[in-house]
Length: 115
Image (cartoon, rainbow, N blue to C red; front, top):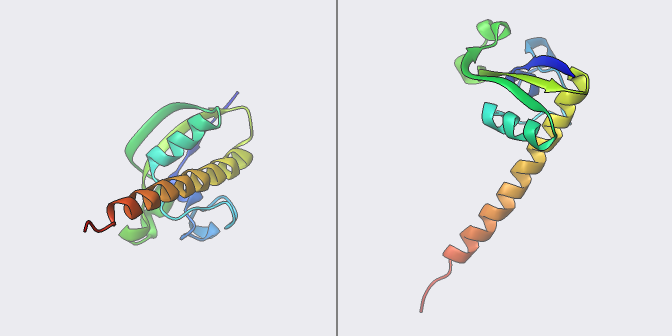
């Protein structure tokens, strides 16, 4: 099993590769949260060894505050880091899609008018 550090900025679609995005645009997501990454990792069978919500990626020191995402995860996976990051990005998209569908159904039901 391989251990590596995952920063949310490595999966952030708003950033360029120059500023730390480690995956292609097709695998990146907007503003990934540390807990979303942890949930996706657990769903994929990876082990979250350490989670720190306050750490800031040193590469982001030159960026504006709106692009700085706090958080760091140390993950144990049987896949290399690049493949694991792509898998995490895809899983976060799937999770967000299912959450959006379930929230959309709830909104329609509560939006009915009583006569």
